Image (cartoon, rainbow, N blue to C red; front, side):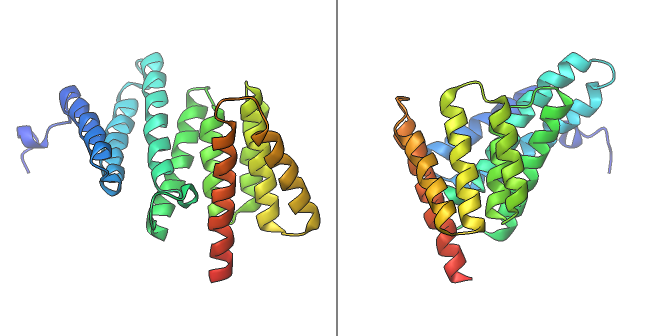
Length: 212
């Protein structure tokens, strides 16, 4: 194929902007299932951009990595089954999401800018994949770099939920209740919402255990 053909040239900055606009429209019309493949195109474009400038312009490469981390997070978030409002998510989609979470974490490491959010989504996917020790490791790492009290309380809740799902007994139930109550009783405006996410995830993953 002729590499000089315009149709086979690299995606332009304007086309990349249009992809972002398309993603917003897909969200607006509730076509979330189509959001992920478009986000994948974005991620591939950004990864190619990083490869092109990482040696010649490390600062720009890091800026792109941070943006790409957000795209990877979105893919991971849209393919995580623990939200309770995304409908059925196939095992293939969950595998893609877990991969995107790992890619996002690698971008963070390369940019020397690891965030609690990217660690959390890695822990969340590990939890849904029943990789409990890895999930705890990621949640604990997120706790270590958390800069707000609500973030620390959230991570504590997810650690407690992971231990409860791994080994449901009286002690893990008590530990979860304590972590949940600490989060729920926080004076943060979204404390109740964050606590409800724990409850929803617990119901979803407990139901999956019963189905198995």
